[in-house]
Image 1 (cartoon, rainbow, N blue to C red):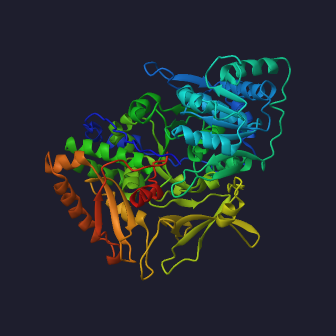
Image 2: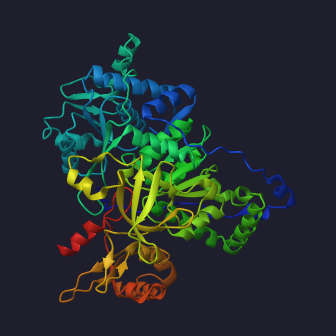
Image 3: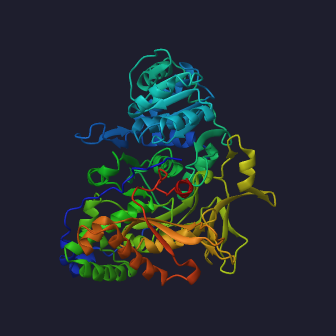
Length: 614
């Protein structure tokens, strides 16, 4: 849905790595790191609603830190307790209902990742009405459109969105209140500050009115409306209930061990279900804390200060991290030694001796020192990158799902992670391959307790993707893949992106893009079938954004466009040798501007191809 024309991959800055820890390893330190297998219980929880999770977590962990945020860039992280979060959620929820009469109404929430976003969302899930999380990067006209489509009666927004809200306010007469996060402003017409509502709500609670917390939540009731990113078509509104969200927490617990000592690092946008469910509701359920990143350009210093143990990411972030760290290792002239130590530490880990954290201490220190899990989702990732993350001792997990599955449908268990796989069906779900070809590939169908109610005001679109088979609802993901003998899912393409040749061969662009992603001279690329006048056959083409920094480093400065085109084409020819002939790239286009992207950094293929038609 979001168009990221100016998005730049964050330029991680790491100091030169000396890798001194490698030379300090001796027999004594190896003996010290001999480990006994942990007796960890992986068991699915049984929560029915998010309010149940909220109540338990904010009571059991009331004195523990829940959120860390930098309200002032120059100051340290501000620590916010579970007790404070509970008080603010109850105050806001009570105030929205009693003061503003918003019970059972739709409320848009828009803003950057901030403590006040979490409070607003939780107040809705605990009983106010229907939450409508909106992408903060949408242009004003699209924000206005979402507010109208959702029939929202209130808009809660961050201070950074104040000017945008001012532009559209007069076009939204149906909106009863515009609530500014972290503002003390009293009610003035339709404007009011969230802190004022919280304060008044808490006074109502102190007077003995506990009606907000006494609201019983129906697990099946429509509680969240999320508009999809619209990578290939106009955004649809996905209707989600409390059961869908609670099941995310329940099933992940069966595959990943987390506890109150963990700290999540929030860098992905909260309006996306991946971050708001797995990056918010899940850590809350175990009493963990969440450190909020200030923004993409602050990732490294924020990691080093907050020292998280877990990070949710998209492939673009993980791949860039991989490239930057390895470039530094090469500069330090320790790359051969690092490779040999990876082999050695893998062998030792195989006999239950893990010295990776000591050997690769400098890499860990650059990521805060405590990182133990990185989860990648939203798009396929080069298996080589995931393997490297595992090799340096960080658990690399992959999740799979869509907004329509709220979002988790599959996940790689940490006790049997398989790099390259999108995971195996979570405990409340089942995966099957519909009409598989001779290689076992076909469209991925999902049956899950996390499956949406349906598309908002669009029964026709719902029926196109949700099929009732033997009395059960199956969702056609639109992805193409196969299941191995152990039930692990491997995604090979997207059916909507598939290029069909004249002789009936299917070509999935993602498969070729993963190979091209290994080319140093290519920063980003998009493979597609180019229509040619006078021909029914599509020309396999690729749009490429060159990595000019790497090209300059390898080939020198002041190269012409023709020379850069030739350099990249030579690399593409090498990739073509790895492909069957009908998949070979025949055409290269050097792209001078950025790809349009969703907020999870997926290229908007439909939008890019529409540009060509125009």
